[in-house]
Each structure stands twice: as structure tokens, then as C-alpha cells.
Amino acid sequence: MTDESRGIGGTVGPPWSVDVLADLHAGVLEDARAAELWPLVNADPEARAILDALDATQTDLASLAEAPAPPMPAEFAARLDAALAAEAAARFPAPRAAPEQAGSGDAQVVDLAAARRRRNKRLGWAAGVLTAAAAAVVAVTVAIPGTTQQSGTPNVAAPAPTGPSVGSDGAGAQALIGKGLGVRDFGPLQTEDKLDACVAAAGLDPKVRPEGIRPVNVGGKAGTMIILTTGKLAQFRLVAFGADCGPGNPAVLFDKVVGEK
Image (tube, rainbow, N blue to C red; front, side, top):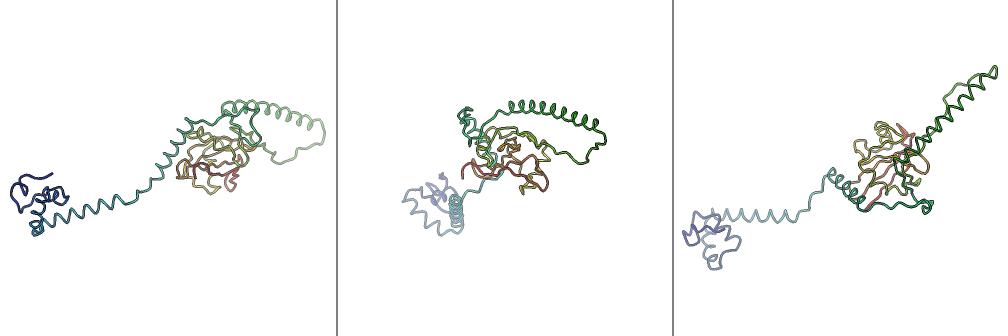
């Protein structure tokens, strides 16, 4: 980037062209020409000031190249983790074991829609049985003179488990991440407010929103599992709450970290 009008083939001396000084500083001039110019430049304070500025700029650039890269913001890291996990799940879906091949320790993956249909059938059948039983109790109470009803709150049956089955310690829950990302199915908890109360009771930060929420069957118990990012690539924290969780009662069924350590 030499300036042909000053210093090279033209006027040698101040005012110096910045291009000529930059070429001299960078060592791109011929040796004979550089040997001719260096004494003249060193004797000129203004030229020396420009060369000192070039030295400082070169030092700054070198320090930037050696400086460690700043960490990725947690928000973008979480989005990247979720996107990578979704892509991995789409490309390499977890194999579904045949019923006769599934061992006692294996987690059986159940289609959510089919599970809901079976649950609704069970609930309808159970409602009919409860209605018949209530009618029988009323009939017996009326038939026996002097019989009085006892006050008190009847026991409330626990909700029937829905969603895929996992072990009581969360074994097999990792296979649910791919289809759980982006899902917001509160299962037996029904509402986000109730889930937030369970999260707070467990000591988790309610402001950290889960990447996925889905119902699970944890060793025969109805639960709701949340998928949280950990800030590490392809690593997630899975926490499942029982249907009876709430303020002061986290009812955590399992809490585990899965993925790359």
C-alpha cells in the first residue's frame, strides 16, 4: 500500500506518508530502500509517533488473539442444547422394545395419545363402579334404622398413572427427552401454577422455565417430569414430581442429570 508521491521515488522526508511509514514498519520495502529511510524516519518526531502507534496497535492485536474466548450466554447455550438434542432425537430415535422382550428393569415407551384413551376408558369404568357403590351405601343406610352417617373427608383416590413408564429411580427417562422438548403437558398437576408450587417446594428456581413438561408413570405412580438445561452441551436435568406435590411438599419422584458430563 505504498504512496508513490512521497518517500518512494518522490519526495523523501516530512511530511511523511502514512502508507510509506506503514510499509516500512511492516518490512515490505526493499532492504536498500528501508536502510535509506530508517535514519530519516528515526530523526523525525512525527514519524516516530506514527511508528509507535503502529507498534501499540500490533501489540493490542496480538493480545486479542491470545485472549480466551468469552463464555456463551446461558440463554443461547440452553437453546443450542435443546436444538442439538432435538436433532439427535430426530436422527437417532430410541428403539422401541417389543412387549415380550422388555425386561423388568427396562422403561416401556408408551404412546401418549393411546395412553390417554386407555386412561379415559379406565376413568369411565371407575366412575360407574363408584356410582354403583355409592348407591349401595345409601340403600343400606336407609334400610337400617338408627344408622347415622359419619362425618369426615373421604379418601381421595390417587390419579391413575399416564404417560411413558420409567423406573422408580428415573431409569429410562433419558429416552423421553427427544419427544419431550417443547411439550407442555402438565399431566396430573393439570396447571402451570401447581407445577410452579412444586418447583418452588423442591428448592428450584421458578424463573428457569423447563424446556419440556410431560406426564410419566414412575414405578406405577402418576408424575409430571420437567426437562431442564444445565448450561452444558447435550446435558439435561430431569425432575419428576408426584401428583400430591405442592407448597411445602415437593414430592420428588426422581431428580437426575443425564447426558454428557
